[in-house]
Image 1 (cartoon, rainbow, N blue to C red):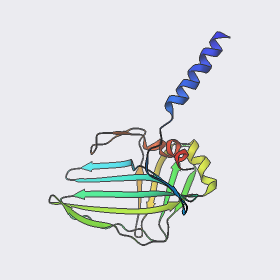
Image 2: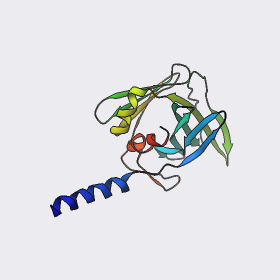
Image 3: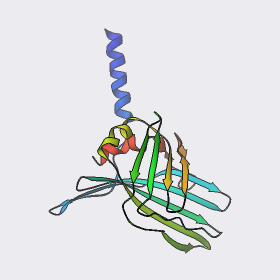
Image 4: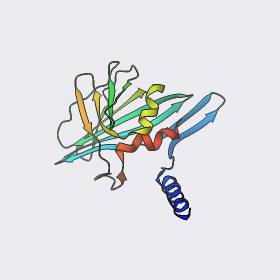
Length: 187
């Protein structure tokens, strides 16, 4: 009896400490409606030579409509070709159980902004993708294996890591558990 009680208490304490806290960049509620957005979270990073690419996810709940905000930040001393999102753009997410989740893009055509910072070229692209209710349970249950972004002219695959130590901000991220850890924050 004592052993089963100790095991139960250990499992409960592990579960409690394993849950991530919700951090919001916006959390508003007024007479017009409500809007919640989680902070940007690094899900992919590639630093090679003098170029760097970072992909960020954040989750948004605008009056009950759940969406994923994708932000791609590229920095290089060389020319950075534009990637565009349009009405056909999608994010395909493959989960560890083999299931593929499709998030359709919101019908906007964007190619991002190009800016110059300290002799480097920077390109920032943001897009929004919608969840369906059927996909939420799988996203909350299984880690991400990889995701594919269908841009207007190409498809690009991004492999997620269990642990990502960012070379840019020196923080540690768990991209494969992003939805498992943060969907609860916007539901």
